[in-house]
Image (cartoon, rainbow, N blue to C red; front, top):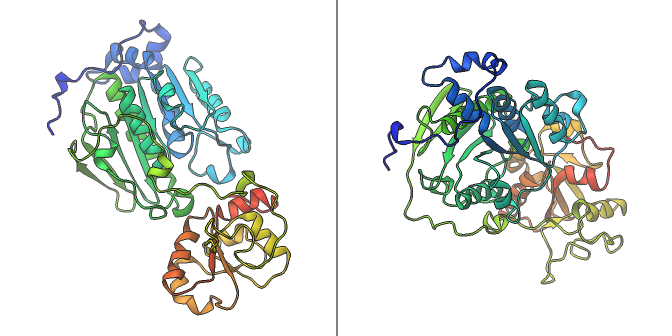
Length: 414
């Protein structure tokens, strides 16, 4: 694919009103850049940018967008600030723990520049509201942390005709690019199909270095400014990757694919990404009346619709089993530092990385439940043990985090 020459690319946003002397002083170092000037700054002031997520990448981008003079910033988020957020989500502080991230971010933006319009969208982004939300903005920054949302953002942007600046982070690395149908390839051209569930850990499961958030967030902000003002060469048809351990950047080029179907409507993105519905009774959703029944697997909510034994267990059923003192091996497959933060009583620690070498420690004569933080690693442990011949294994849906919310609020969450 041949990218348009810089002279052929038009700025995404028209210029707003002339800047006051105070605004000229505020942005004087920015205005002094070659090929920037007041008109580019007025384009930023007239722009409406929607950011998906006020977490790691949101905290790296939203304050920078406000400082650079983007006139209106919308943010979609439903989470509250937690202690485990603070090492990388620098827009929030200790005093914000327990507060809505939108409330915290509103104050952060206001401290930077009270003239920037902040629009909080305290909604879960899905196929029912994405098109309406996107229609009010010129551009979307996608800082989400799951593939279902990334494909939803891509498709909604395709249907509304606006570009997406996206970023992804994990452990010591990250990547950033632009998805813009009609101007270049989209996220689906780069990733036609999502990875199998459980194969790519989240930051909560796999970890993330905070400086990676800052690096990828800075790239996303630069790309946003380039699209809005028309300066430079945007990352259309290119992905920039960063490896903090080596300090190196790499670039991957890609093009519009003839094998990718056109986006004509929004779909069920959880289904597209192979995600199963949440377990009934977990996190306070669905039937909460299961209080009795046998302690043996398969005789309460452990039975599937066909009458067989499910390989999943929810927090309420696990708590019921533990309360009966039935024979049960509970295995925590998280890392030792996580086990030190919180663990379910009677659990023994066998980290996932060493599980294959400790198969002899897994009982075969009684039911076994494995759990992790959110249920991602425990599902991998389940498959590993099943492939090794175990038939008595189940994993805790939602992990210890769900158990803390539903059963034992005294357990520390992280």
